[in-house]
Length: 293
DNA sequence: ACTGTACCCTGTAGGC
DNA sequence: TGCCTACAGGGTACAG
Image (cartoon, rainbow, N blue to C red):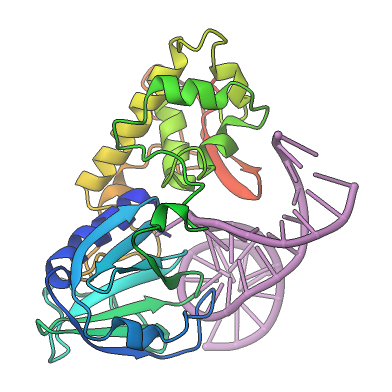
């Protein structure tokens, strides 16, 4: 479900109730999600204060006073919902069953500040684990991750050199978390559309041999950054079941230019093309063959 | 190296 | 109404 903008939106929603608060009680309601929970999961959390909450790629990272980090991944359908102790939503925008089926509430955090945070995940592709904060960069899950697309390190030079020898499609190149961390299916489609680049093009055809990017790479970098920034600003997108931590919906889905629009007219003024759906690496790609070359 | 396929699991939308 | 199929934002393993 969640790509970078959604995870960042969740982070911003959780930060004020998690940071500076302690885990008073942790209810772990099953053995595992995608993976088993780590040994002594509850014991290693209870009593610990969260000192900061960060996002890396599509992971949420809660730094604990124990020196450990609670790393959380939402998979496809994971979401966090915040309530007060009485079980009422913090906000009154809780319509449409935004709380999800309680059968899929797998973890409940009761915090020292009174907040109750439920992790709900119907498909259970998400997971939680605990890792040492000091060596997080070396951790299996994190050591291979590529650059954050909203950081200074994401430059045309970086992308140019990463693409240089890649014969895979541009779409699968951009989906690769070892290259860019946090991009997913929707935002890759949207970025390629905005940059006017075909998802089928070989990644290497984008790059220049000199190491100095030509025109296409900077355009793609700008497209990725602006698509992500706009989505974060809009509070992420909502497809099917994504909800913000207060149960409300994101708004970015109203802004999709190509994603999910197969058969509809290309929105670029001069273009008479039709958005097409193809499958690449087992995932849907939406693009306009007329203006994406 | 890269692609396609299957898989993890449940919910939902659409066709009949 | 139900039953069936296809598909879903993520990621990994494996065969070719």
